[in-house]
Structures are given as structure tokens and as C-alpha cells.
Image (cartoon, rainbow, N blue to C red; front, side, top):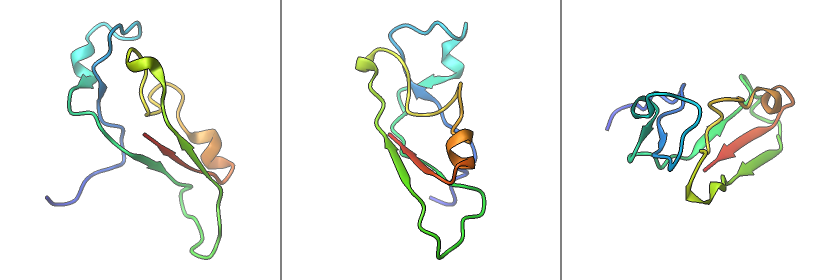
Length: 85
């Protein structure tokens, strides 16, 4: 309902073990199934860009499909559309 603000990554799925943050409740949730699409800032409407589709592994134990720690900036600056699940 309404407009979704997609300018930030939402919470990741609850992790079996999280070594990065002390309070995991602020960064994780059971409501965590998202498709993330990152595009260069102002792509031309008639320009064909490569697309990288990333399916996160993690063995249902650790990690997420977002780029919380690294960011997709290098790929976007190279003109690549990034899709993560």
C-alpha cells in the first residue's frame, strides 16, 4: 500500500551467528525476503546495460543479499545493474 522508500536496505534475515554487531535485533528480522535492484544514478533510456544477478548462498546460516558492508558502488560506477536476492 502506498509508495515504498527503496533508498536503503531493509533488515536482513535472522542469522544463526552474527559476528559483526552486538545488538542483532536492530539489523535482523523474520520479515526479510526482498529483491534488491541497484542501478546507475541516471541511466539513459536507450542504453543497454549489463545486469549482474546475485543469489546469496550462506547455507541459511550467515550473510544476506544486501551490500550492507561493501556496497554495490564499484559495479554501479562501472555501468552495471545489480540484482540481489
